[in-house]
Length: 456
Image 1: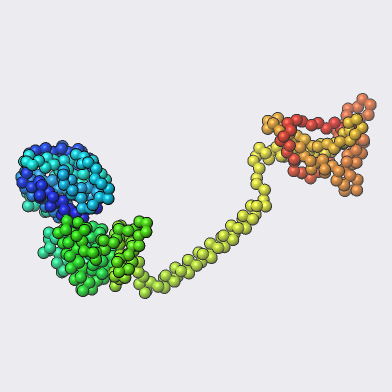
Image 2: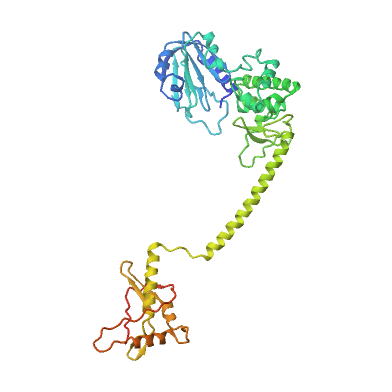
């Protein structure tokens, strides 16, 4: 995000190329985020600026505006990735790694572009591909712009308002809040223009840890922080954020290696750079230099140690319960491995019917064909399911010894003989012998029915 130095860079370009010139052409394309969220529109912007003269360009922190020959005046903020381009000029504050493509005009992602009436003609454009920037029209006298919203809700600019940002003012601000000092500095309502890299740089220069509470600093630390704020912000503005002009001892020169291959994340003297999240932003910190001298949010008071022990016991108890639960789960797993799964209702019903039929057919004698005996399998055909259920166990059970020492086969023969019909009498049904339920053998491969013909 463009910070105090980057905005100062653009203000200097506007003063050089647009001030004291009349805007003959003003083109704007509406963007509901850039214009609409602050109550403006592209049409209103075109009408307000067309034919007017630019008298000056000014700044407060991350905001900048054009002073026009008459109100309203355009007030702009770059957001995360907005920028201001001037045709034929390299306004970027960094040197691109790739060769520059032929200049496209109007540039890509433009929100408005203007052209001056005077010669040589100057063309400029506001661009924002992420659309977090904001463009407003402030309808008031130019000298009162800082007294209306949104500027009046922002804190003083440490460069423009140097006489306001005093050591006493800073001490009062720090002691009035209990938040990490970097979060306090990033809040534009407290002080304008300090962003992520500027905040890290001035805290490194002041040897202050960014997580330390703002109300825990000594007078000497407050004095050093005040000096560092003015020093870092002044250098950023006077160099127009040209990093090649920054001192070699600055953290800025060495902090950009995070996540890059073969990056050591160290200073030339070997001091390690670590990265923390403070105030919602990634912060570069040198622990060997920026030491905690007061409480931070993660610290624990001595009187809180006892509850902490109780909490530790609770944690141990929970771990013990967890282990017990894991053992119980293991036992459950063992049970599952030896317990057969429940069959579906349909399969169960087939099984029950098969068991009954198997019992009936086991009670029948062995049939012979051509003088040869054949062991009969108890079978059941399910016309709906389309397969035959056969019980091998049932056939085997028929040959098991009965309670009186006689095999069930012979017992069945005897029973069949006594139950044989006489003369023209009606054939009597063989008695059903009670047997223990047996698990059927399901022969799905054979789709045929088997009948057992009883002799007698």
